[in-house]
Length: 397
Image 1 (cartoon, rainbow, N blue to C red):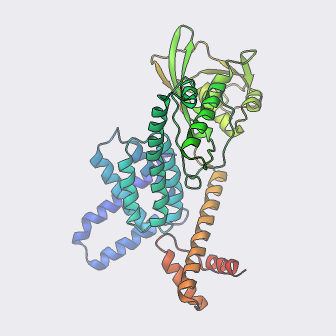
Image 2: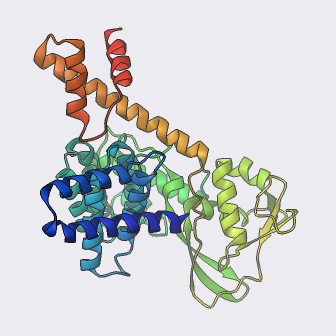
Image 3: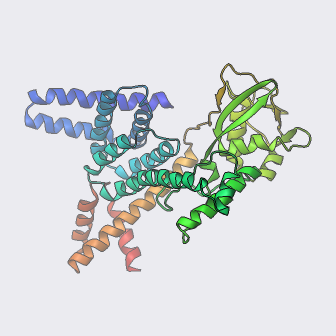
C-alpha cells in the first residue's frame, strides 16, 4: 500500500539525515561502520527498497503544485543518497522508467526538474541507462515541435490542410521512440469514427515530415475530453482514450445497454483494461457515468454478463468531471514479470561486460574474468558468480 512504502522510505531518509548530522562528531572508523549498517539495512533480504524508492520519488515529482521547490529538492537529494546505497540499481531503474513514462504522458509540467533528477542519477554512474530516459524527455519536446507544425499546417490551403481542419476537434499526438519507452505490448481498441479519422489524417500529415517512419498507435495510453449531456446539464469529462471509446459506444447501442462481453467484442479492448475502465465508469465516487446491473450485490468484480447503461441521473457540482483510472498495486504475477525483465537486463549487462573485457584482454583466466566482470558491474548490481559462468557458457556456444 502507499502508506507502507511512504513510511519505509521516510524512515530511511530520517536515519540517513540523522547519521549525516552526527558524522562530524564521529571517529572515521565509526562513520565507516555506520555506512555499512545503512547499506545492510537498505539491502536487507526480501526488502523492496528499490521499488519503494522509485514510487516515493515519483510521488515527489508529481507533487510540484503541493510542495515548494526547496522541499522537493531536499526529498530528491535524499532519494539519490539512498539510490547510492542500493546494491541492485537495475530493479530501481526498471520501476523509475515506468513511472517517468507515465508522468511524461500525463503532462508533466516541469521537464527541467525531470532532467535535473536524471543528471543526478547520471552522476551516480548510470550513463547508459539515463541516456534512454533523456531520449524520453526529448521525445516530449520533439512532439511539441511537431504539434506546432501541425497547427501551422491547419492554416494551409492545400487538400491535406482541409482534411485536417475537417477533423473538428483538437487533436494532439505524442510521438515516442520505439524501443525506448518501457510499456507492455500494444492493446487494441476500436475508436469512434471521428477519432479514427483524425488518426488517419494525422498519419498522412506525419508522412509528409518523415515518409520512411511508420506510426503505431497506442490508444490505451492516451487521454480525451468529452462534451456530454446528462439531462439539461452539460459537462466536460476528462478520461482515458479507452474510457472514451466505451462511453461513445453507447451512442450507437440499439437497446441503450451493453454487457461487458458485447463491449469486448465490439471495441476489441483487452479484458483486464476493459474491466478496469468499466469499474472506474460505474463505481467511481464522483464519476458514476454508467449504471451496472446483474452484478452480485456489493461486488466490485466486473463479470462478462454484467449489463451497463448510461446513468441519465448523473449530476455533478462541477462543469469539468475527471474519471480516475483505477490504479491497482502490482500483484505477484506482475512482480514476477518485472523480475523476469530485470533478469534479462542483468544478463545483457553481464554479456556486454564479458565481451568488453575479452576484447581488451584477448586472454584471461576464468577466476580473473569473474572478478573483473563483478568489478565493472558493481555500480549497477552485484552479479552472482553462477550467473556470470552461465553467460560465459552461453557466449561460447
